[in-house]
View 1 (cartoon, rainbow, N blue to C red):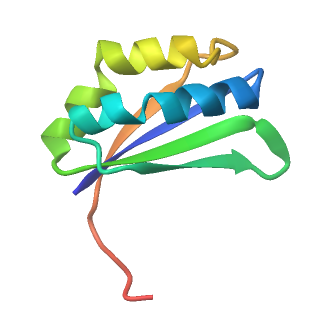
View 2 (view 1 turned 180 degrees about the vertical axis):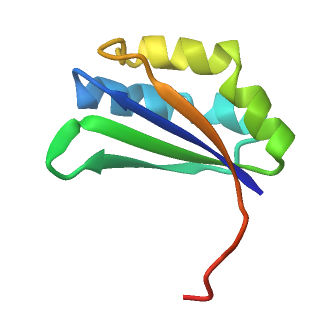
View 3 (view 1 turned 90 degrees about the vertical axis):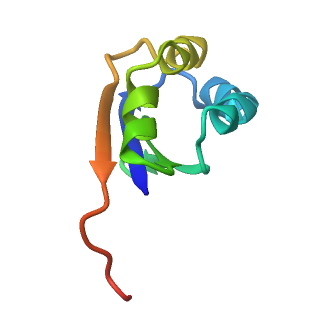
Length: 95
């Protein structure tokens, strides 16, 4: 299992939310197992998305994909350049 972590600012969270939800089927077709959107508590325009992928290769492919670039454009996240990081699980805590 691997993850793609996307950090960026959004000007309009409601627009971002709609695009994120509308794009779920496309992410699933690409292999995504789902994800979670976080907002920084003291800075709600700062959004962090964590998407789960079955393999490191699938996560890397998505991180560099046109699909991700398009989704970020559609979401109006052009406020800042998104930071995209591929994460490989190294250790899990039992609690």
